[in-house]
Length: 483
Image (cartoon, rainbow, N blue to C red; front, top):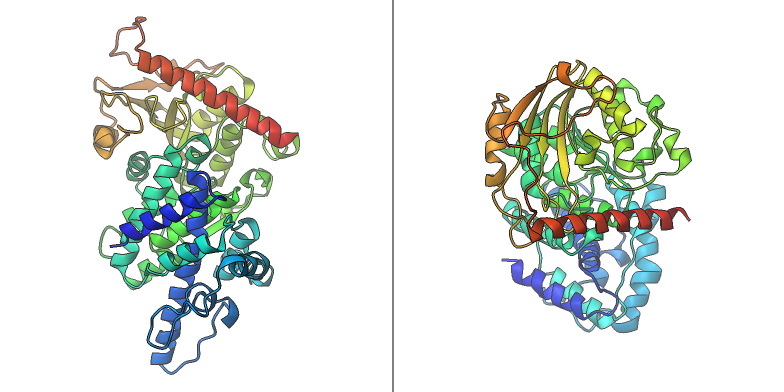
């Protein structure tokens, strides 16, 4: 029903000089979509209050409500073009009045988990990139056609928004850092098997894919009103450093049914691990933290194992944030399993001695579109040492790419065999007693495949070149940030 509207909005953005990439399209769609959602929510709550004879106080004041500036209507409900701002007047209102007003909500909010705080956080960081008020007027009128009134409508919007996020991820390295393939996320969720009443956390949540898929997994069944309230308010928690990812994550969770997402805009790694208490820990951690970056010395001081590698710092954070008996699934570069630097060795030792690293999923090149870097997923439980590690080497039988991405069927065997840690042609078990007690190397070496040096295909060579280019670009970007 809304698919054509989304396409028409993209057409408007494509013609807008201020929007040049898929990231821009998603960002600009997101802030408009958020305000339309907020208006629909407020109108719905006002009607509910009126039905029971109670007053309702709008969060947004009259001049800044959607119906006042974005989509004014005549008494008969038709669009009032005569009173609608457009051209330079509209650009001036949005940039100099609307956004400053909305960003002020952060200071007035009672706390970070309120809708007021999220309004302020979003509009304090993001900017309208429209240069033409006529293009913005067209986009707003199209956005007004969307409705959040029913669950069916929200479900369709959720599907369309996920498609937009995927396209952004496919567009290149910067977009890809916010997007983890949903089939991989769903497999990780199934293995960790969250239950209603447990808390789920992602400290590098990006577009909130892990939190959204966990929500869908937990909603798959009949739940009581109390359980539904638990999912709404006290189950899913996330942190995100980048403003664009933050608003995308917020909007994605809203469309999946969480009205006030518990996502905080912050750099997770600035948190000192020594300050984390039992009340700060979670039952389930699911994450794909950024890797290849370099953190400043002052950030590294927050961690017992000092390293500039972002992913290694996140892994320490996740272990510390996990409750005793808690379960985690974390994506990391496959080189972590055998890197010889002190940080990698120290982290592997930590995982083996203080956690049960029970499963490792080895992902093929091309799993993460636009990245090329080979990864593994570490599955572990906190509180008891590792005795045996079950490895599974994923082989879809084809080269993965934009036109042939990972799908749920590719991971079905892994999910099934993992329940019993069964050995197969693609899976095997390693006893920790056989692991090098000095370096704690955990290389992925399938004993069912003869060790030889076959000639690599052109696709494999290109994938490796892509991976090296991506890593080099990531390092250069981090260096620029630090200068």
